[in-house]
Image (cartoon, rainbow, N blue to C red; front, top):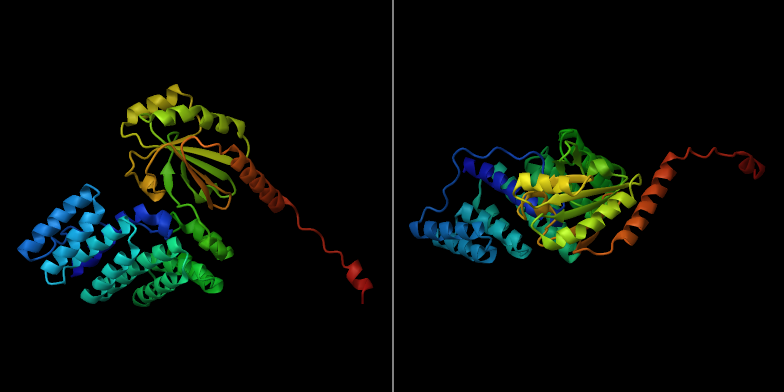
Length: 370
């Protein structure tokens, strides 16, 4: 059982990168992989079913895998913790959040030590939160808040739980409570945490935490610059997912280049994220085609950032406003210049307001009134 929480936390971190754009709740530094992972169910028949379901996950047949893990759990007497976790995983992958809630509740019934209970509550909260955000319904979000709160009761200083609870409270428009939990997160989180700066902004503006925030990330561009989405706050961001092997992407390239050149010097960052697996071929293509704006290679549709943005087809572009709010997603070479102009104008206006000195207070008028 001691191994379970490490295994659960480890697999959760891997999985959550794929659903963050739905759930938006960030994860701090992932735990170490357990040295002796749980082998699965004890019953031989259940073990065969479980192994077959694992193979289905590797092939991304998530719906069939979900059925397999449920069957393996039944064959193992209904107390196979790895089966229940993997079923939760599969349910999240296919967006069946009600099924994920049910699996998390089964985990809660089977685990016993406090750490396992807290992590299972966290998984329950994540499923509820994703359901509520997708369906724009408060009941699942209230259930998520209750689950995160229970996880915090057991592990009060856990930064994942604090951030999740703060986000749920913000969605419920309990802004002062949300602010307090973001402040608590900042107290215990590392400044190196990718979401530390975002939490600082949420302390000042908790209403932003319930906006459709683009998933945060940290990456190092081809020219060696390390950035996060938060580091680009105040600028409009255009993210372009593409690959050298994608014909429509190559056709769209002149338009992306035109945008990068046209808005040079304005508060706009263009970031191209390649799904190429061949690094040398990608670098050669970028150099030959004068792609001088920010470049990063994610490697495939299974890449970390591609999964955060749920990219399933390319070319795909995302526009993000100066506050980090995800504005639009386009598949193909859509005409996005008009949208960019409006967002850039808004970013410029906001920057100008911040740079203006505070107006002096004229007391003469008020003195004449008394």
